[in-house]
Image 1: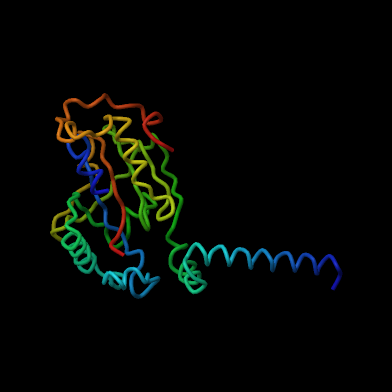
Image 2 (image 1 turned 90 degrees about the vertical axis):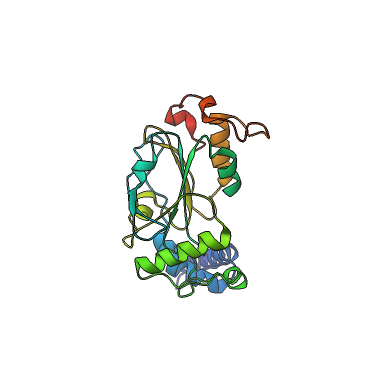
Length: 88
Length: 146
């Protein structure tokens, strides 16, 4: 292996170690990195909505579990603050 | 968000949209959820999703209006909402504020800043003020914080 190849390989390995350490810090522990890559990254998206874009309408289920309504029905009268999230 | 809701509910509408779980027991569970006994598997049916949403509202005494995303995650996909995200939609149905991706860029104080810019800061005497004192709608580009 040439000296250039060794340096390249070494640099890549060093970057991978730094990236893993950074992700471990961000996720909480090295084990969490796996869970983050496995379960979080596939569902996290920066998104394409920008200021001034028409807000997409979506059909939602009411908390009673039987009635549906459209997000658009809640807009128009006042600004609508929309909070997306889950329990866990 | 509850404090912001209580401060501005007379002047803005609020809607919480429950999307797929972020840290269910069968995926990336967090120790903090175990400690707080918030342990749920990822719902496989809409009924399971509704049950968790109801648990959340009841246990947290959560006052904001509530809607639940369908099992195709249509709302999540349309708004790139998972795991958590904030938006403000103006009276014209346009995005006036688009928050960053949660959890790292989920910042309710940016929503408060938007509402404060639009309606003014909340004081003890104005927190129950009539919405008729609201300022006119700003242009979307002027209304956001991003």
